[in-house]
Image 1 (tube, rainbow, N blue to C red):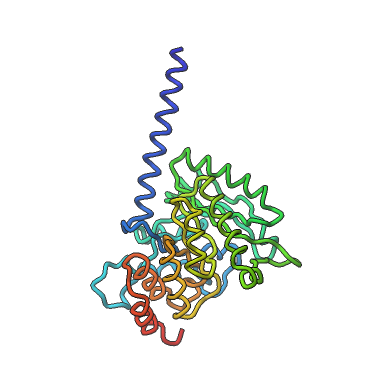
Image 2 (image 1 turned 90 degrees about the horizontal axis):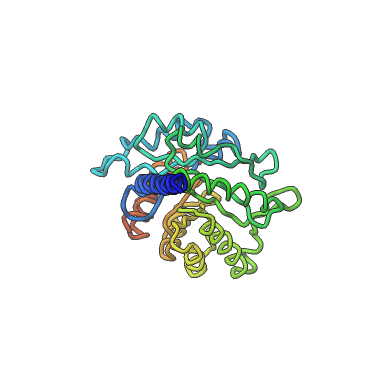
Length: 309
């Protein structure tokens, strides 16, 4: 009986400690106090290689720490994202600029020269803790033929992350393979917005059910449809993916519409890192997401700082 009591106390203490860790890391992630996020993934460096903007991870990350080109009374880190998602290389370089941006370690990967829709486990919770990551991320492509095994990996990582007090970010897309290529349901988006939104809602709900604090998913094209996605998130921070690089009007309009639907912000890869200078784009997103800046004003500022992009 005494052994059972001791075991029970040990379990309760472990749960308590992991809860404390989770709270501290979430506070670090949501450091601006708005409950919203501007995330800059650079994990395409592994997925697609040294593509435009990611020829040098170190050079790109160093931009986040340099506000010298923008005379302003704003704090230096108002030109930096709230977090960077990546792998070991990003972690190594980002550590030079802490506390500019917390790090989220992506534990899953594939490459564009292989079966990109499938995802392999390439890291673990213990590695994330060793790297002092603020959170871990897992990618699942719903409706793909690999969905079931990706869900199994997702569930295992979620359990380990919870036990270790690490927040979990789900990168959750409806995506399958067709004729040897990624099929992101581009045709369905145009033909049946309701069915497309239903798929995104389902992917989002799975993320909540499996313990995600943050969910990155596809924007459904309008504030009206994306409201359903936010509701499916049941209180998780739902942030939108950016997709293809957008011009300034489309960039601002998309963020503004998503926010009006209740989105918690953005997680933009190519829309940040593919720019010659990522800082104006990040700054414009911060102004919208965290400061509630008027979209027209944000657009004027962005266009004035991105001439020639």
